[in-house]
Image 1 (tube, one colour):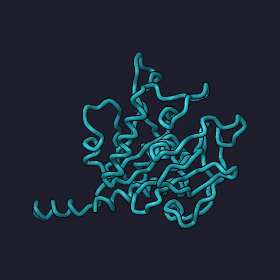
Image 2 (cartoon, helix red, strand yellow):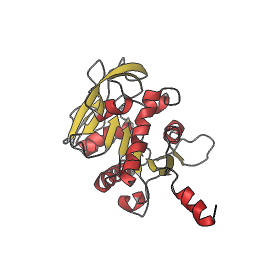
Image 3 (cartoon, one colour):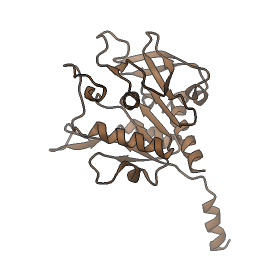
Length: 247
């Protein structure tokens, strides 16, 4: 085989999508004397298992969000601290714990809005799910009851059979891993509810416009994606959508 033929063979290999993942600056990183950066290893591993290559971005860049996303094929907004309630017109409760660095919410919001404007697929998890709602004009319940099944544990969700989520995982009911103390109150404009927990808490959102490749879930699919194909399928949706965007 000639060099040209070899190059052609390599060129036909399946492209590995580059996934931008929002990371956080943190004041509590084990083993460091000063502030550090944090992103869930399980999220990154799930992207890799699903067939993508994750790259972590952090706040306080001199580049605008759209420029930072150039060369990426999709965006993932993972879990983390609470959204600052001022973004949805409320004062924080004593139980509300916002990000260590004030720039975090704006950084992620700018990435989200730029990705949607660019047509990049977006997967939003837990905090990311709540940010999607807030950026669409929705609000949050700042603190669920102390005995809420959402604070730490496994519970089922019921999924709209016609939703993007149900099509991705192949099921309309799924046990999920939750650990959050906030939830959706008012749903944002242009979003539709596609999954709920038994107590009525909203568990997944999608755009009303099905042409916008965005999926947002309240639970943590990365917790069991290594052994649960339905949870991994959520990350596979992102990779498939990224490849479709490239095509």
